Every structure is written in C-alpha cells, then in structure tokens.
Image (cartoon, rainbow, N blue to C red; front, side):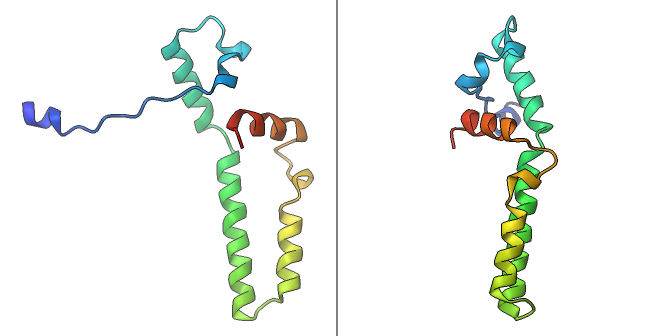
Length: 105
C-alpha cells in the first residue's frame, strides 16, 4: 500500500492571477474557495476552444492552398474574415480587452 501512495502524481495547484484576486466575485472567499471557483470558471470558458477551432481552420486553408485547391489570395481572404473579432458573436470588445489584461498576453 505504501508503494502505491508514492506512485501517485502530484496534482498541480491552481494559480489565481493577481487580476482575478481583486474581482468582486472572490471577495469574502477563502483561498481554496477562490481557486476552486476560478478553476470552474476556466472550464466553462469558451475562448480556448474557439481559438483552437480558428487555428485548425487556418491550417486547413493552408493545406488546401498547398494542394492547389484554392489560391493563396483566397486563403488569405478567408483567414482575414475569420480573424475579425467584431464578427465573433460570443466575444465582445470589452471581454476581449479584459481577457487580454488578465492573461498577460
């Protein structure tokens, strides 16, 4: 039994960004409660999945261009339309700016 305990992987602790520590939703919570709530918020964040979808679509356009199915200009035009943030129905300008400030990008 003792050997089984030694083989367990240590779970990495959720780190709360300094900008999130001052959010009103976290006031009055203990540190563990803050980490739990923040990790739950990350699970329901749609932005990483959407960015991955955009990246895969851009890769697909590049591949189609390399295969000769579409021209470079067409691929560039499709990617430029895809990357226009105002066309994203979920993310508004305010939330994009907040995400940029909290993620440190």
